[in-house]
Image 1 (cartoon, each protein chain N blue to C red):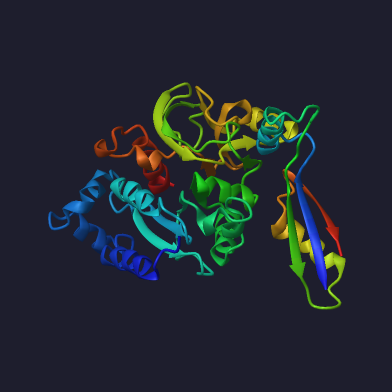
Image 2 (cartoon, rainbow over the protein chains, first blue to last red):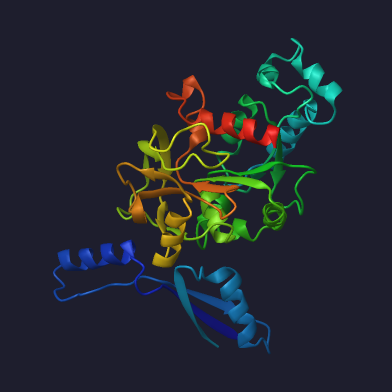
Length: 75
Length: 273
């Protein structure tokens, strides 16, 4: 089974990389891009029966730094 | 990125050749002229005082571990290098140095994987019982990832790796790390990082400010850190994390010696402790 973890900087934490992407899109002529947030997706290949609580523990312990990042899990 | 394990073993062998901390007799022997490399040890005013015992953690990708060792040794410390797979620190360590570099290739987040290595469990126990720790650059990132220090270090606001000597302001003299300076002293210390943009939520910042736990700030903010913060102390003031490299300004050959007083101050504080 697979799980997909999406990690994003929390709202309010400045995302300099997202800002740089926004500027680059603007300079390519894409008007109207008002904001870009960049995160990461982590795909996990898991043993059958692994529950969401275990994946949540993985996020809390390693995959996300909850001081600055939020995460969501798709099983 | 991997450091050959042979390097680490060699460091350990070097540390074993100078058993400064074992007995008073060994210390006396080190004071003799046959070991000029540890001549600074004679600076101890207290008879029978043992030198500060430091352990420096080494991760795959650490690259300032030896610089930190040299700086501690120049201040007279007895230094042991400790590989990240070790489950415990050596006995009776006073201070743990977490060095700069690119531990585990900075994968996932800077310092995140190192923070979960076996030796960091030992580091947490050391700090929990009141031990000292100094994290420089990637070491600071490791200390925030272990949550031994608050906040987090994000990508530099300018998105560029910044490598230059910067003016650094000492913000407090109330710690073993900064006791050699008065608050307001300006130092010239090198920085070299891509992820040194210190951020913390407003409550944490207010607390750091109120408890006088901002150890250093930038005079000319190079990375976007909130409040120009360059280094912070733990609540008990025994853990310091900082992005600038004092160990790279500890010898005239470095082009500056402004960082040396940190190691000398630690030596004084920890020997008399």
